[in-house]
Length: 106
Image 1: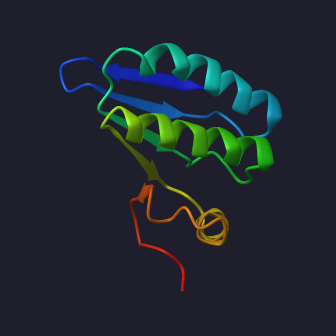
Image 2: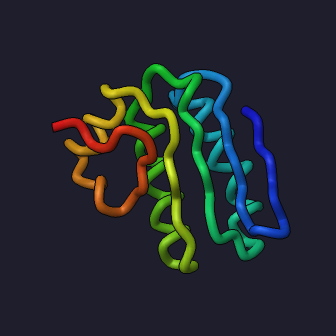
């Protein structure tokens, strides 16, 4: 997992190196837990290398989204596959997370 910080803009960019399944999701939750306590305004999650997300992965993303919202920040997801976008839509969290790109599947 690649994590880059822009302290001036208060943005963190996260690129998981593989699918967001239990162990990778828990590693991401631990890594970001420390960062989110430091006045983070935007978290950009780049899913370019992610083909699938399991339940633990979605729970992690939902938790991060909630924590960002409570602190006045926002979560942006980039490069999500069509299938992953559809899963977000089915989970009914599409309004709480910004997904950049072509928009939500119909």
